[in-house]
Amino acid sequence: MLPLIQTPSLDCDCILADVLGCSRSFILSHSDEAMEAYQIEKFLSAIERRCTGLPVAYIIGKKEFYGRDFFVNESVLIPKPDTEILVERTIQLVSSHFAGRNKLTVVDVCTGSGCIAVSLWKELAGINFEMDFFATDISPEALKVAGKNCEIHDCRIQLLQGDLLSEIDLPKLDVVVSNPPYIPSGMARELLKDGRAEPLLALDGDCDGSTDGTGVIARLVPQGFEALKEGGWFLMETGEYNAARGAEIMLEHGFKDVAIHCDLSGQPRVVEGRK
Image (cartoon, rainbow, N blue to C red; front, side, top):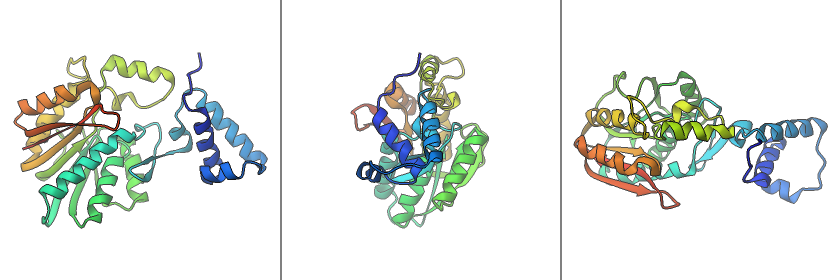
């Protein structure tokens, strides 16, 4: 059975705009213009791929996040609008708690495409913060994508391969941010049956015998606490699946001022705490 496409008109417009190298508004205002044969062939080929369930972002090789376009492929998760809450909240905390500092040390754990790290680097650099900025991922292929996005957006971010923070030598940090895998294993595998082709490694939050998606979170939280300076902040996307449990784990490991923030649809999305 073919997957149900929820937004066929929008998907077609986005693919056509990519094929023609123009904006969607141009397409809407020039609907009577003829296409070249090679453009028609490329468009139809892309539509066939979309009909298998492959997301538009993988087909055209990019996705917008926090006002910027990011290169993506099937080695990384496609950036989601709800994750922008993590970026926004981090900027708010840094602006209020580290104003006047000469330099910040920041790490983005499980960076994937690098969209969080790049967005934070650009925004914080734009308000005159000097930074030693690191981004980590267990996947070398994901780090290649993150590296390309750092080049595209001219960011000075040091990319490091490792399993969370356990194998990585970093200075003491002011801020740790992460969008780790947090979906229960069975649910993650079910999601991928629609052909979306996102990497299971970046979705499946279960490890060490967990079944509720908290395995990676339970490993990351104490590592984050250990890596932070006193007064440093840890911010983590957990989604509606594990926000409450994520907050509990942070409290269990000594974090203070633990709070949960909701996304634009009102679902619990980001958990934060201070060392």
